[in-house]
Length: 360
Image (cartoon, rainbow, N blue to C red; front, top):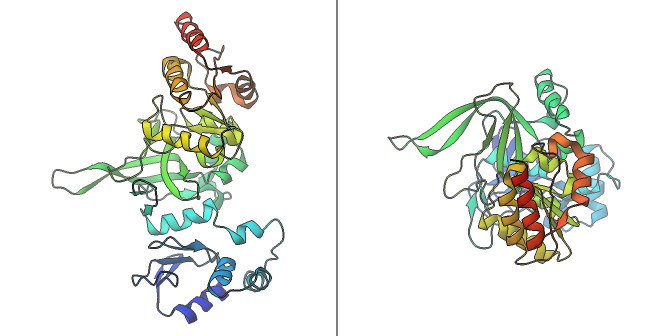
């Protein structure tokens, strides 16, 4: 988007080079520390002071007062691409992928919340989005692993899945000297969690090695950062469907399509429960389905009981397949179990628990 950058340079004045981005003083809030980041190749922008974000088309509409038609024609001229029904959304709204570009460029940044502001944890160094590297041989082992786990190409794009061949992860504790400490992860797929506005919040990873020292890793968080305790994978999309299916891990959640979410463990926190309650308040027709692993029947019934404090549309999956989780069973069986989930009641809860005892 060279034409757009030329316009910004003329309009906004001085700039600073930031790798694949160019930094300007924000034209919307007037900050003076060059926190207005613009992707050189796409024209995607975001201010990490006031939160303004968008792209060339939106900038023309908001800053100059262009009509949509005028902005569309100008962006088509800059990009050499016709903006039709299929591309309109990409040019008129910041996507998860585009937001991630800026999150990587800026690093941790504040995300607005109603009660308290927390920052995002840094991504592992050398993180690479798979959708950008599909044709590189280095990405093939990760694509193969995901394919073998039943993950579709569409899901790789939708969830902006990435990989790290070797990267550094910041620890959540300091050294004895009070310095930041790091450890290394290798050959890992990285999954991202976003908020309802498509902003990156949190990451967790899965090793593709046969015998890794650490199979799964939840990103280490400081007390002022988002952690696995206050985010839910894919809730931003699931809340827009007619049901939310709650799993422990990402691979299981993917088997339920857009409705699947992951809480990063058997125990759900008060913060995570509040996120589910907010989703219900936005859509009281939501159906909640608890689908934890077979060794978490007690936690599943406890979660169903907590959900039932604000909605009657609570169901529990009582799987007859023993230790096999949703990812082991595949999409078809998983979705059949979801359709046949039992509505939560004290009786159904007891049945689930007794079933579990019978399998011991």
